[in-house]
Amino acid sequence: MRALSKLTAGPGLELVDRPEPDCGPADVKIRVLRAGLCGTDLHLREWDEWAAATVQAPLVIGHEFYGEVVEVGEDVSGVEVGARASGEGHIVCGVCRNCRAGRRHLCIRTEGVGVNRDGAFADYVVIPATNVWVQPPGLDPDLGAVFDPLGNATHTALQWPLVGEDVVITGAGPIGVMAAAIARHAGARYVVVSDASDYRLRLAEGAGADVTINVTRQSLVDAQHRLGMKEGFDVGLEMSGAPAAVTDMLDNMNHGGRIALLGLPHQAYTLDWGKVITHMITLKGIYGREMYDTWYAMSQMIATSEVFRTAISSVITHRFVAEDWEPAFDTARSGQCGKVLLDWSR
Image (cartoon, rainbow, N blue to C red; front, side):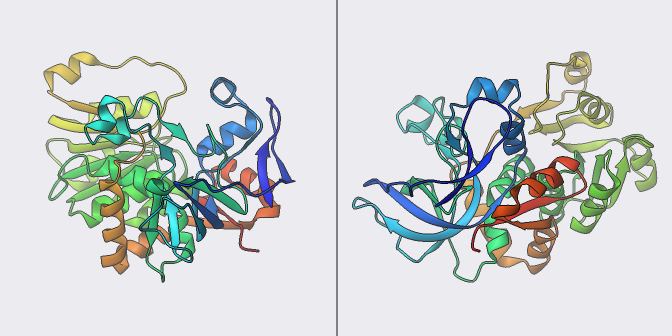
């Protein structure tokens, strides 16, 4: 089969031919139809400090995918050959304190598909049956391939009640744009998105943002003035990992505001803890998806709202066949895009 692989500990990837993975007794084998590029995949190609400290080569990368079930292990029930499915990319131990308490997204021994074990940038991927999310037969394969990042956005956005609230999102990458669609769907009063890319801010507008702010020219204060806001934002969703964005968000939160942070910074940065304390701001770090409450929530939003489906589909801006993985990665790195997909069906 074709497999986009990290063959050695260093920069670069190669599309190689390798044997299909074996399906164990508790596993499911999926023929990949679509796969999405993530920032993690860019780090793996470049082989930065994080990649070098995390990944053991050789490895097939990729963790956002949708495909057709072609084999199930002898101990598997509830998943049938021929089903269409996406996959939860975090594989948990099942025995640590958090797993046993039903908080599997907090597992201390989490392994990542395409990071710690072979992933989905290939014709076939094998994952535990417990990680398979069976999709409705008629779901657009492109939508099925973005359930992983949509899950990140859903997990972050739905940390707090949004009905009637004023929401600010810093970072208009694909997950930030999806979060704007979720906040609009969930009943926020105003949704404001900031970023340094006009291209991505236009995507946010298409997904439901009331106001977008290019931080090279404006600040969130300007957004408040445009909307006639008097007391600051109620909910903040931090998707950029940029210290300046966090500072701008914190400066524009209402007293008692709540912030969920998903964006990973490149290094430690200073935070105004005096403001956090005196303004009684709640901060919560977010990683991955809640298993599997997040999956139920995003599935129902997709199933029940054509407006929401259209908004999420609009985030997908570029599609490439698997053999064109290099221009696909270059497009994702450019920032002049939303979500980039690889088509493995051809």
